[in-house]
Image (cartoon, rainbow, N blue to C red; front, side, top):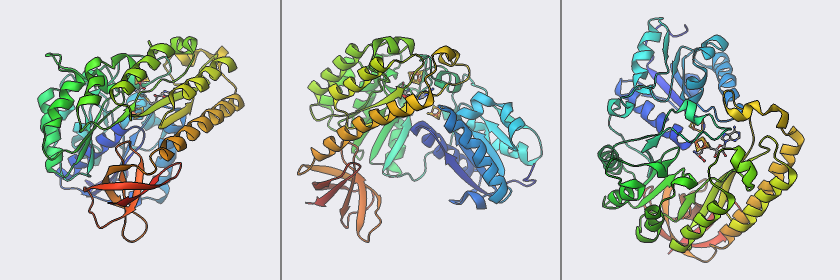
Length: 434
Ligand code: SAH
Ligand code: SF4
Ligand code: F3S
C-alpha cells in the first residue's frame, strides 16, 4: 500500500468505448461528492483511476504499462483499476501489478468505500454484478460538456465468438424509461445540447410497455433545450422499423448511424456468430437510406478472423464499396481469453497477412471518408460548438453527420451555428458562419 491516507486529489483516465467515458465521468462525480478534487495531471494525483478496456490484447496491455509509469513518475498514488480489465482479470491484476483497488463496471458505485478500505490497508476488490443497478447509487449530474453521453442499456447477450463484452459487462439490461428521461433533463440543465444514448446494443433498449429506442427518442425530443440526439452502438438484428422511421420523422435525431458489420462474407459472419448476413445487413442500410437519404453510415470491421481466406476478405472490400461509409473503425482480430474464437488456433492468420488486409481495408475506408467529406463542400449545416481551436478566435464543433468542423467565430461553447462548409479535408471540414 502506497497511500496510507485518504486521497485528496484524483485523476480518472478512461480507455476504450464511449461507455467507459460515461462511466469515468460518473466515477469522477462520485469522488467529487466525497470532497475530493479532480486534477488533470495523473502524476500529481493522490488517487488514479484507470478505467480500462479489454476488447483487444493491446488495450489490456496498456493498463500494465500505465501502472508501471505511474509507479515510476507519479506521486506514489493509490491506483484503482476499473472497467473491463478489472472485471475480466480481477485478482490477477493484484498479482501482476501493485494496485490498491479493483472495481468492475457494474460495481463502481462502491468506489468511495473501496478507496476508504484501501486507505486502511485492507484489500479492496469488487467485481460483483449485483441485481440492483448501480445507477440509483450515483450522485446527480454536474456541469457537463455540450455533447453528453447517457448510458441507457448495458451488457450483451449476442456472444459474437471473438468478443469479451458479454463477459465483462454482463447480460443485456435496459435502464428504466423514467430514470433515463430524468437523467437527460438533468444533463440538459447542466449544459448539454446534444445527448448520445449509449449501449453495447443500444437499439435493443426496451421496457415492459415495448416502448423501444424510438419511443425513448420521441420522449427526449420533447425536452425543449435539447437540440440533438444520437445513439450508439447498434446491432443489425435490433434495427426495428420504428427506429428507422424515427430517422425520417424526428428532426433532433442526427443523420448518423453506426451499424457494425465486422465482415462481408457470410461464412465468416456465421463463424463470428453475428446472426445477420451480408445481404440482410445491406437491406437494412437501404431502408435507413430510404428514410433519411443524407444519413452518414459508419461501421466496425475485423480483419483476419480465424480461417478468413483472401476471397472472403475480398467480400469485405466489396461490401465497403457497396455501402460508401462516412467513417469506420477497423481492427486486426485479437484472440481474447475465454472466447470461442480464441480456440480456433489452427485457423489463426499470420501477422503480415493481417497487416496487409488491414492496410487495404483502411485505404478503401479512407477513400470513402474523404469522398463523403468532399460531398459536404458548399453545403450549409448547423455546427454544435464544442471547444476552442488552436488559433485565436477559432472554434471546433460537429456537423450533423459527426464531422469535425473548425471555423472562426465569436460563438460560445454550446452554441449552434449555421455554417457553410468551405473546405473538406479527409479528416475534418472548415466552415464559415453565415
Ligand atoms: N457492441 C458493438 C461493439 C462492441 S466492441 C457491436 O456489436 O458491434 C467494438 C468493436 O471492437 C467491435 O465492433 C469489433 O469490431 C471490435 N472487436 C471486438 N472484439 C474484437 C477482437 N477480439 N479483436 C478485434 N476486434 C474486436
Ligand atoms: Fe461484442 Fe457482438 Fe455483443 Fe457487440 S454484439 S458487444 S461485438 S458480443
Ligand atoms: Fe472496451 Fe469494455 Fe468498452 S472491453 S470497448 S471498455 S465495453
